[in-house]
Image (cartoon, rainbow, N blue to C red; front, side, top):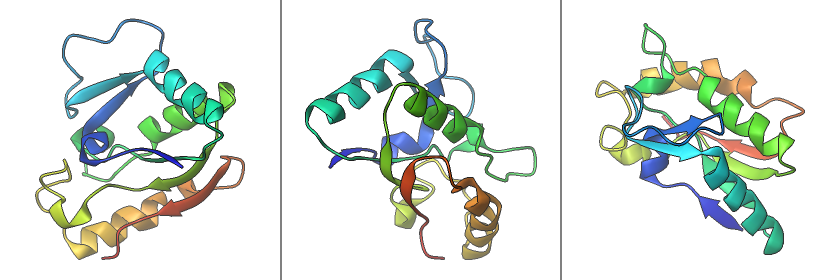
Length: 139
């Protein structure tokens, strides 16, 4: 396996274009992952004959006005992954749930909010995504 994840991934914006990365990430994010960088990961995993494990951004930039997580960023990452011939073996909903606020989650992240977020995102793990496993922190 090749794992491209970690607490930094919780707040990383996937730039779904071939333009250079912006000097500063969009609001609600702390870093930018470009297509070229992600394609490098896809190619490395293929060359190593390794399954890819990752996590999805979870920060304020991935949330709607009510604070609910939306799959827009994850959808873009997965669509590019598939278009590039890659495949994700497993994906974490977020990294380090025990340090949720430090990792970019809403400061008011509670077990109830985690359950609501998971309920909203569960249909996101759907057939056709070529993702074998999707996990969420226990709440």
